[in-house]
Structure formats: structure tokens, C-alpha cells
Image (cartoon, rainbow, N blue to C red; front, top):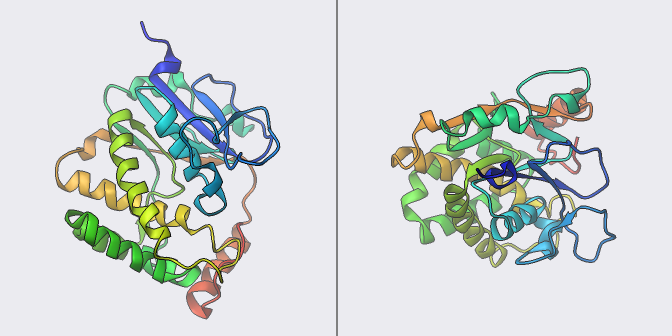
Length: 268
């Protein structure tokens, strides 16, 4: 019988020392490890990697590393401050999704995603336009139209939605991870050739990770529309934050971006 580590492996993208779940299906991964002090975790600058791109690709350097270097039936990504959870506990680390909880779903589902994030008064496109730079999404559309024209219908549909699966968090059966990553990184590497980052702030320069959050929904919608993945094979999982979120500050910034064109310049 296979060991559970070979069935599910979920990387925890982190850039600093932090409390980590004890469950062995999790693998803390130092992202952007190239040229940085070692944290004592696995590092994304080993094997086939794009660790040096971390300042702009964010946790995607971890996703790339997992794709190229892990061998498991299911592979996933979460963040050191954000995890999947099926229950609530006083200590958030007691709530983190365990293999014991997940294993019951593995035969029924192909892909696990965070519950939809809803913007209500903003579409995914307009929210991005108000908080970042719409040119980045427009260039992405051009690339998809040229390289993957069969996805353009899903792209245009997703951009009009007021909700989506965000955070670059997912747990996928290996074959879907392979397909998604081949598609995603082909698009993002081409996007690098089309976007001038010289005048962007450090925060705004981290846009590849943000673009991928949105176009994950494009990729998934296309799989559903073509029947490659049935909706019944996708399970949404609640997310928990390991630290308190300043919802007042976050909500105020959201409204300032929409009504006063004040772009984000920091995380919340």
C-alpha cells in the first residue's frame, strides 16, 4: 500500500520561519530561496526551478518547483498564513485540513479549490483595473488568443464575473496539475516579454502571481465547458487565516480603489 506522502503532497509557500502543520502531507517550501538565508525548509531553488523569478512570480515559483520536482498522486499549494480547513478551532492550527480528513474525498474529487471570493460590486477585470494595471490582463488576453484561442470564450466570460477562486491555492490530481502548469507558465513566460516592469513599484511588480489567480479560473472554466472535468469532481474547501485580517483597512482600500482610482500599494 502506498504511503500517504506519495498520495498527497501539499507545499506551504513561505519566505520566513513560521509555525507549520505537523501533518506529513505538508511540505514547507522556502520560496524565493535563491540567494537568501536558509530557513531549514525545502527550497525552491533546487532541481528544475524558477526561484530567481520570485520577486514578481510570488508563490508561483513554489508551484513550478512542485510541478517539476514532486511525485505524488495529488499535489497542492497553500500559504503559511492561509490554509484549507474543514472545521473551526480556537487555535487555527488545530483546524488545518489533515490527510485523515482529505483522504475520504480523494476517490470522489479530482480537484480541490478555495471557496469563491466574491467582489459583489466589481468584476474580476474591473477590480484588477482599479487596484493594479489592466494592461497586464489585456496583454494576457492577447497571448491566450494567439496561443490558446479555444480558451478565449472562457477568458471573456471570467473577466465579467464578480467572483472567482483566488490565492493560487488548489489541490489537484497530478494529470491536471501537469496540464494547468504547462498552460499557465507558457502564458506567463510570454507575458514577461510584453510587459515593461521598469516603472512599477515593488508591490505592483508582483503581478504574475495576481494574473495567475484570475486565469486559473479561465483554465478551469474551459475544462468544465469541454467536459474534461465535471463540476461534480471539483470540491470547494473553506479557507482560514492564521493571523487576524484588518477587514476595515482592506474594505476601505477596496472602496478607494473602485471610486477614487487609488491602486493598492501593500498587502492587508
